[in-house]
Amino acid sequence: MLAGVHNSDLKHEYVSSIPLESPYDRQIMKDLSRTFPEHELFKNDAVGQKTLFRLMKAYALHDVENGYCQGMAFVAGILLMQMPEEDAFSVLVTLMDTYGLRGLFMPGVPLVGLGSHQFERLLEQHLPDVATCCKREGVNVSMFLTQWLMTLFAPSLPLPCVFHIMDYILAVGQSPDLYHGFLELFFRVALTLLRDSADEIVALTFDGILMHLKGEMKGRYRWVNTDATSDFNSPNAVSQTLVNSAIGWDLSLSTLNTWEKQYQSEKDLRESKQALIDETMDKRRILQQKGDQLDDSIKTLQARIEQDASGFREKVEKLETQAEEYEQRLDRLRVHNVVLNDLVRIHAEG
Amino acid sequence: MGMNFTQATWFCLDVIILGNSGVGKTSLMNQFVNKKFSSQYKATIGADFLTKEVIVDDRVVTLQIWDTAGQERFQSLGVAFYRGADCCVLCYDVTVNKTFEALGSWRDEFLIQASPRDPDNFPFVCLGNKVDLDQRQVLAQDAQEWCESKNSISHFETSAKEAINVEKAFLEISRAALRQEAEDQAYTNDYSDTIKINSNQSQPQQADSCQC
Image (tube, rainbow over all chains, first blue to last red; front, side, top):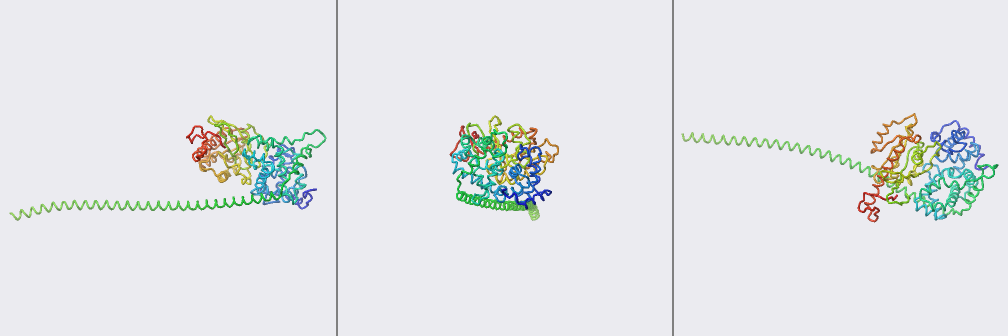
């Protein structure tokens, strides 16, 4: 079978991880009841939740750098609905490492940013009416594409379509001629979905477009099962048409690579600008601190000058009082002098 | 963000809900918008949004509420949703202390990414959810004190499940967002020579049109 199902090392690794704990156990547990909450296998503490927990934990331990990121559980859930857990583990690891899914979930979620940028350009090129309408209404591609990418359409399409897309990815997603492995296949499906809904989208406004793309559009891809014996979850004519249309797009690898280079250089520029801003902010903060310190020393100096000034004022006042006393004494001496002169005169006359 | 500005007296307000994974952001939004609670919500990947028309102080206002993914790794995706927000709702779970302790960094991260014009006065509203549960870890008083220390953020204890205080909290959120939007428009009008949107001219404080 496909995608490394028979990798016995991975199977062994999975089994031995079962009794272990990972640093992500709490986060994984929180999401168990929130992954396919309406599906038989996972709803209301069903057995699938425990399997999903073991699988996510095993992956978090396998790829310590990646760990667990929300969204992964949907991808893992799709696999668990179709195969035993040890096989699902091998396929998940292969999808992440060989098909390129890992970049979706890594810290900084790099492939989500790149994917949104690339898809915006693809829309402009292949579905210009839809692109114009999204721009007019302020719909940013990342507003719907993030969820589609990180869950491989799981909540947005009926399960037969989700399974069929997964089969399509597993069948050809390893080819070196593809743009980032699974990502090109994802773009093809996403472009098909937008082309199928183009008439609705151009007639809708901002909220309507997002509501449509995040849920309402699901109805279009539902298979009306007329044959009671056929398996509800197996591929059907609708899912087949969807995948066929996806295959039909003519995408240019070299154009995608050129756009990626532009994206990277814009990103580098943005990041170096941000680094410059951060640096400037740091400098400003240091200057602010220095300014504050200077303000403080000025205040101290002013206080000291005022203290000195009031000391001087006191001294002057004291001197003034003294001067007044001397003057009074001088006055008294003058009076004394007059009296003495009179006495001398009287004496001389007598 | 792209909205249709049909009537001159309509405001379209962007509200963003932040907080750790599993505190009930999606449930709070759905209780407010759809008046119902479900234990079957899917984990939010990226961001979801709902809109609702509300009447605040005799004005019809369209709230555009953005519900975000709580795992830290998604923060680098925030920018598209953070920019242009008129009010930021910080959520924690009263039964998990860690979710309350994280509020400071959610607030800081928002201010860095959204870079509002006047960060000190940007409106936040803080919601302590799941008061219907018994195992409380965060005291109302401690939360209240934290909110006071952050320039008097309004604080509500809510239950999305039992619809406790949800309506009241979102009315305050709408009011805060409306004030912020009106101030932003007044600022924009003050500083632009070319565009005058107001019908009653030469009154830059009365921003009466929806232009988000």
